[in-house]
Image (cartoon, rainbow, N blue to C red; front, side, top):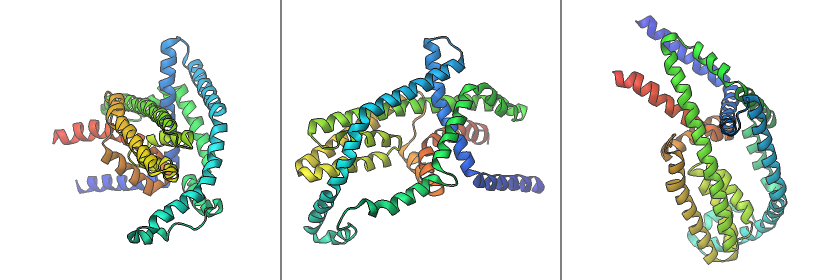
Length: 332
């Protein structure tokens, strides 16, 4: 028994060290799996409308994504570029406004020392370089994205063969469990991706409409950031609110309060009504689980870790419920 336990522990330690050494490869593979599931959701939808072969459905899905992305780019890019340039001109005024607010409160004098006297993009360059280095990791980020996209297309093109590899690599008594896990993980990931995409789009549209009605500058840019950061629950919405709130501070205290109320209302609708409704039949992560996974993978892998934290948590939740709880704990 001692030799058996020693062999099991040694195997686990060796596997953990090997996984850590190959963490960037695993990151790319998992990112490709998530993207292939997104492709698969579109493929299934297309095949339910038009009975065509999977390869043709994948081609149609990629064409629709590229066409839709190009259309959105041509419609929104000029306004986004204009608002990004306007943001650069507003930053000095925002810094001056914050300094004046802090100077009126003696207890906040220490915070004022951390705000630069003048805003310059050169001053942000070291931060940008460190973020790029963080995100790049072991390889260039563009190469990583290309590899993820290529692997995702190959996985989506023939998921059955890749599925059989995992099933046949499992000892026969556990193959039914692996097959069940693959089905549940696919359903959970597909449901999570669909739900979060609809939720992010809704947040974008509601924020854009609300900021336009309030007359807040940079409404489109602020709404786009708020929509994208919806994929990073809890941390994302708080960070996204800083831009419209900072712009509103430059105009009036009343507008600042109105923007804050708007963002709180939208986030409560998204968090307590929209997201639970969209994810009730698949999987819903507790806020504590989401934050813990983001902090843990962010500390280990940087920005890429934060991006894959939630889909990985979705998969791990399914595995823990089916294997750890049902097959181990419930049988003790």
